[in-house]
Amino acid sequence: MSNDIEKIYNEAKIEFDQFLIRQVNFENIGVTFEDSKFKKVDSSINQTTSISAIKDNYFGFAYTTSIDDVGALIQNAKNSMVGKVDGSFGVAEKDKIENLDTYKKSIENLTAEDMLDKLNKIVVYLKDKTKAQINLEGYIEKINLKVLTSKGVDYDQKISTYINYISLIYPGSYSNVSRIFASYDIEDLDKETLDYLLFLYNQSEKQVRPQSGKMKVLFLPEAFYTFIYRLSSALSGNSLIYKRTPLEGKIGQKITSNQFTLFHDPHRLDFPYARAFDDEGTRTEKINFIEKGVLKNFYFNRKAAHKYGVKSTAHGYCQEPTEPASAFVPNFMVEKGDKSIYQLISMMDKGVIIPSVLGAHSGNIQNGDFSIGLSPGIYVENGNIIGHVKDSMVAANIYDCLNKIVAIEDKIHFSIMGSFPAILFDDINVVIK
Image 1 (cartoon, rainbow, N blue to C red):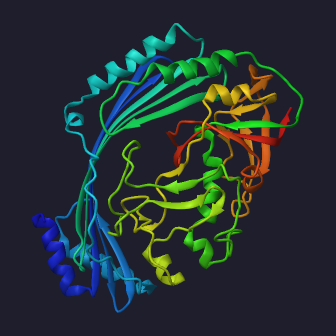
Image 2 (image 1 turned 90 degrees about the horizontal axis):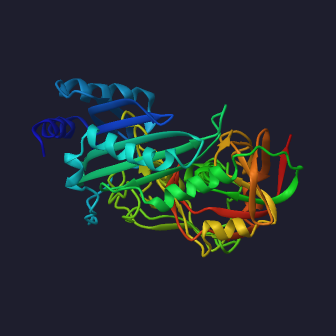
Image 3 (image 1 turned 90 degrees about the vertical axis):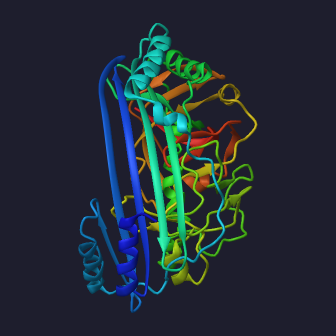
């Protein structure tokens, strides 16, 4: 325990009945290429220390980016209790946690110049093979996380992350095909991924105007957060408490195709941000939300679990270091299938591939409805990509779609809101102007 943390701990013991101290040290280097040309380097180093405190069953929270004045931090937490927010859920007790290998020392020696060189190699490989605008972003992140509570929790975890974001952009628009590559260690992006992006873009370069109608739709991982945004709402313990989920009372019932399994495995090391404990100091473990189409679990942080009368599922995470933990799943996962991405495309007699979307956060989220613009839609006939469509949209309900799964890709890819395979659906209404 550092001297600063020890001072906070000792003062908190005097002032509060229970408390949790969380400290995050974050370092980041980012390099950006735009239209195949180097644009900028960004870097940041910051530390945020926060305290979640309980006194007389009231909850208070305060944070600081400089712990020169421990007394002020404690006083701010006390002042925040005037709102009389319920704190009867308490803080986590000490438990046995996994020792996860989430930090690679090789990251420490990686510089902005090294990142520049790696991204430039990607540009060189892509540039002569496509007419697309090539945009790249590369990041190195180092996180040092500490959580301790008045009930014996004293956990530390270091996380290193190396991220590349690649997008091939269609002329005169922001429509693109893209992929995120993320790892704990320095790795060169495999040519298979680059060739896949080249294939999607080059085959769809021509603009086409097919007729609207019901057809097969292939959601790529980068667009699947359309579904996850709605599922995260429906599966939240808070939605159960406030009766805002269509899944209430359906544990053990079939709600999707038996091909579909949705889970969170915080100990899985082939994807970034594995965690041995959540931001409330609760030990993490794998949990299935939907298993082969059957609803199995909702997710809870300590507050929601206490209110609903169940145990926390270790999903208390701070979405910002300046906020207290709330119920949140940092990396939803969908189980892979048995078809390659190219096999999925070959199975489409008529349909669209969706690499990215507009308006994924709009619509009746709680009911699972969505109406999204395709950015772009890649049109397929008889298993062959014909071109891309503009001014197109898909309107549907995720539960209807998830019961119309044709097949699922045999690989999982890190993306927005989680890690997913591509999923092929049938009989989905597509509107093309």
